Image: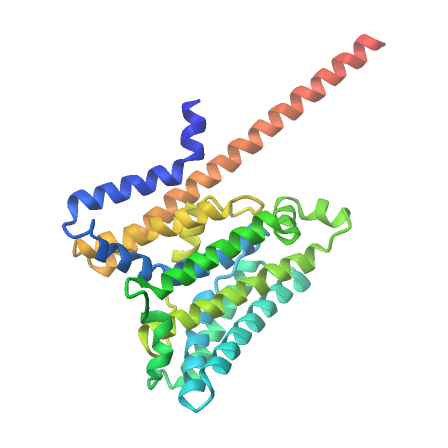
Length: 333
């Protein structure tokens, strides 16, 4: 009973422990102002994790999201600075992200290339493209109206990025829990061959997961660009590892087919509290990277051990069933 409780609420328990630790050891952490700042800081991470979780649930991976974030934010900023209306520029940025993600999915399913290799290569390509067309320099000159998305407030209290993040979480939960597409993602991630034999196109479903991921990457890029009031060639650096950690901490399995949006929300909060709390304590960025890396290793290890244990239990049950069937056949004879 106790084991089931801990398995079900592991992430929530971890979140409470982390909050309690920083609440006790970091003066100024448990304040409304810092809480709002924390939520604003994780807005981009939350939006990215929503799309990324769908790719992972379908059995895929996209390490290029960090470079996509840099490319789209710089491209959108450059369009706005050069006279393109802000709305059209933002739509153009989202389209760029969708095209890149769609290409990733198409390349993976048509060539059979491992998703990690394909998207890692795309990460390098996109980062090179960003450096080339920006000259490795930030893109400044955004109008004040464009800064509202990332810096504005609702009723002067709640930051707009938090509202956007919550809306994205709700959309993600609706897709995964209330639509056929969400069920298809789980089906492909759980057993691609069985999904194909049932008459569904597993390749199309996988590509669709990347398309949706591209939409969310585009939205996250606009929020990030607005928050820092510029297009930065290195704006997305490191986000892919934070997103992977948040999703895995939240219960999304690397093998696919498992995980819920609520878990992703909790995983994002854990990562946000960890980064914010360490920052409030005055811990340098290098040590923060060390802590995040340790968290990722520990969580992935636990995930792999659970998968290994589940497979062992299935094998034992299968062996016992075969043994019982043989005994029944022998008795019948």
